Image (cartoon, rainbow, N blue to C red; front, side, top):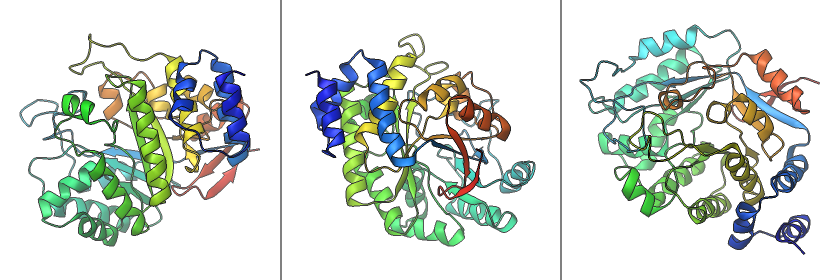
Length: 359
């Protein structure tokens, strides 16, 4: 019996997969069979439905004290394309979106001088002007930075942000949970233990969050698998993750450009499928079209994904690293993308409540 047949038996018997099973999936060249296994799990969880959200990304500054070696987005203060958005500019940007926006997704660099009050004001102003919009803001890395700025512990920071109007949190800043990789590429970012602590506290405070993986740089397959198992255990112990998003690294305009090639679509689809297969306690897996491209994102729906993100508007972080995907996709395009892949598009809100089903 092949490794994949044994793995399917475990899946059918609701047995948890182990590290060796995950390695067998990444080692296998039977891409269609890997996709079929992941799709089988997706169909069991959410049927033919594929979700998208009418949202807007705000990257409020590209100034950052972290200076990660894989980042094409950050700037020092004296560079001509360095920017910081004041709160009124953020409100103006959101105001330009068509009516019906459900979510504002906010992440940025670790600004060297802005006080914690700037972030509280940002959240409360958005809530004041757009009370029905879910404010999904700030990664665990930003929360750790706000703790240093304010002198509050993680729980204190999150309580203040929640009071200001924070509804949910994105899953960025996780990168890959490997100390080896962290020390080489992003030594100033928090390690797994602190990332996990922030998310566990957020879940305790009823702030749902997402989780991510950044792959396709210097990590090994074992480190990818370890990352997924750490997340599965964290969700088991501190439930509150809504969605997992595997992100493929774009080396263009980073210090790694010319040293590594962007991973191919086969690896992207394998990691997407592996995520759905291993993270059996995560409700949703996202094929993030910005990093994958709309076409690979569409194929990803046959590899376990049941979410394709949203309309987004202008996203700056991935595009700074050379992403060729459009800056935003209209709602009609999202519907067609999903329908043409053979699935049922469902517009959702930030918490996966269904708004409209497009049969």
